[in-house]
Structures are given as C-alpha cells and as structure tokens.
Image (cartoon, rainbow, N blue to C red; front, side):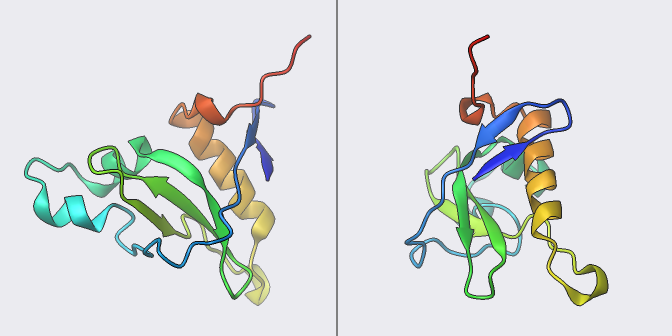
Length: 116
C-alpha cells in the first residue's frame, strides 16, 4: 500500500498476509516489554518510535498497523485509527493517519524516493 502525507511524501507500507502469530495489542505497545522492562516509557513514546513493519487486513476488512518493538523485536498490531462515521469503517482516514504518523515520527525508511 502506498500512503501520502500532507507534505506530498509517499511511503510504501508492506502488506503482511500471514499475521496469525502477531498478537493484537490493545495497549498500543509491546506487551512483553511493557510488563517486564524496567524504565519502559509511556505507550505513546514507545509506540511512536517502534519500527513500522507493515499492515494487515483483519477478517472484518479493517486495516491494522504492525510495529516491531525496538527492545525485544516482538511484532505487535493494532488499529491505530478506527473511526466509523455513519457506521462505515473509514479506510481512507486510516491511510491518512498512518501517513501522518510516518511523517511526524520520521519513519523515513518507508519513504519512496523519486528521482527528479
């Protein structure tokens, strides 16, 4: 999937088709390190600096982001953005939020570099 941030940068987000072994983490951070690592920061600091590994499409057709913990390498997934205006899942809104996250948190390793 290619997403575009408000500045026009494009990012390639890999699809992870086989994700059954990747746990869903409602706390938005690696549960292993959250419970066992002393000095672990708050979820926003930790989640935003973990590596973005890709995304999955769950059985309901919703997108979930997959991150890789910077401490232990454990992959985990969650919705990151889930909104139902009028009762309909907003996939385009999800893409916009992910692109903004990639821009603000400087996940440039996913940026598509174009030659001019």
